[in-house]
Length: 130
Image (tube, rainbow, N blue to C red; front, side, top):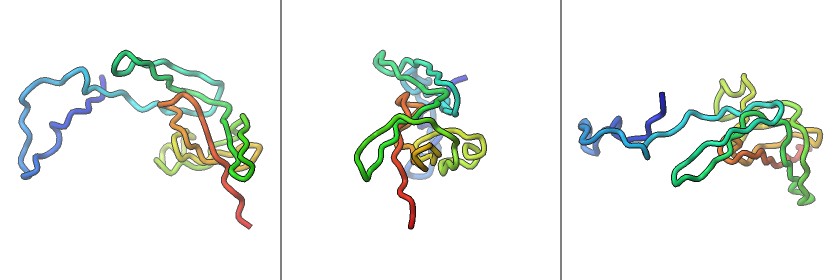
């Protein structure tokens, strides 16, 4: 079963029902979210619109963490997923999405990339409060 991104489920501007005037189209199909978790790196290639390929990150062990104070970036291990503000369930299961707070040997960092879409985990260090 696939995800459908058509707009027939929405209402008209007047508040009335939208009636189907055609069948579903191939370009309207979507995909289920890639729920990236911590583990040995594992990717899956997905064909997208126009024949392009998207690398979906299923598991990730390392993240590119940049330090805004020094301007340097380092590839470090993700110790644990501490918080995911996107979804309470993701928070409990340790799913990594954009905005997830992760813990690394360098300190606490916030994920700035979309691992399920871009195939890479980039993060920026959160400065410690004094």
